[in-house]
Image 1 (cartoon, rainbow, N blue to C red):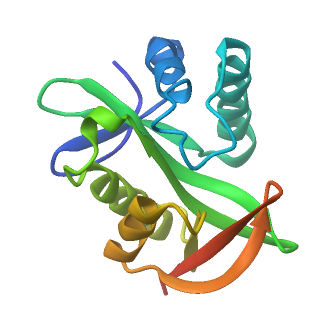
Image 2: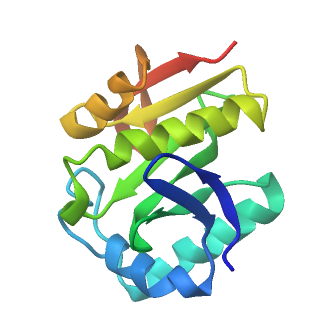
Length: 169
């Protein structure tokens, strides 16, 4: 039985373990999914990404989780709460990447909303952020649908991003 972190109407988010690794690699190497990222990842980089998730679980207690559709147990992508340092401040980001096969079905919005609720109820966060490149209109829509408000422009991993914030208290 996988370690289920949270459930929404159509999804469950699980701790990413070896059973998800093949699907994670497919997601991370998908050029369409990484259109707004510097690049898609190769096998070695995907393994490093997986290992960083495991370190985040150990150090922070949370990170990306596998997004699984409940009715057929299909891996749709990843979503989670990520500890980030932005402009010298520790922030909690709601991050998400879904396979392009499942875009435009509300899964990203639903998974992100589950993570927002988790950050509020379990992690007792006062606010969460979303970091999105200005050209990534689909991710901006997900953030706005979940009530995030544009706050400022910032640099993140050497690229300009829009920082959206959602106050939880």
